[in-house]
Image (cartoon, rainbow, N blue to C red; front, side, top):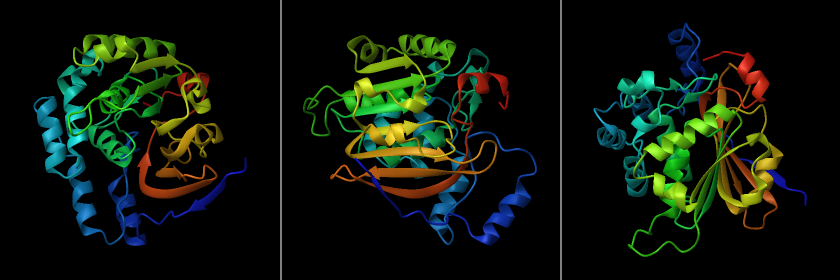
Length: 294
């Protein structure tokens, strides 16, 4: 089947804003650093400026701050983020910074994204993270975001009814030590461990660039590292009406966060450029372990 790709991507930064960004950032930005804002969007600009101020005293306070800054908008996203305590998913040395709104190293040249980036991606996927949905998290790292997905797809609906089907969140990580660590993280999280035990949450080791076809097709796919181009394997594994959120661009430089929607006909992909970002690259295991960019 040949897929038609239509692009509704728009420039997300004006020339003046680009110059200002270049002036302000003299050092190499940390992966997952939000870089750009839509030209002329004053409300969006205020929100982006607030992104890095969304710190909390504890997990609930962090989520409340993200909501107060209008980064988290949906009640379902807020509830799921509160159910997954970020403190269980950072490295031991960073426990004291678990609720600081910044990315943190989790070893093996990988990071856990800043809370505001997780929140942005969750909101982009909110309409697809329904009870009963199936979702894939590529580059699942610590297991944090996959756990939030699991609470959203395995939970009861807004009216308090039962989930309409066997919702499932799958996280795929290509570094075996990180995949094993993510399982330990979930096991230590009392609100999320039952989802792992029930099979609503699965954490596997593998090359996420190829997706995870045995559990597809997926209502939504999130990619936590920047691909040089959108992988065909991932769009092929999207269900009809499904959505992919993925950063795309060159390693170590400004990339762009894209939303890719598959039409109900299953033949057309619609791509939209949402914002500028910098992520670690979506690459082979050997390249990641030999390139210590974090």
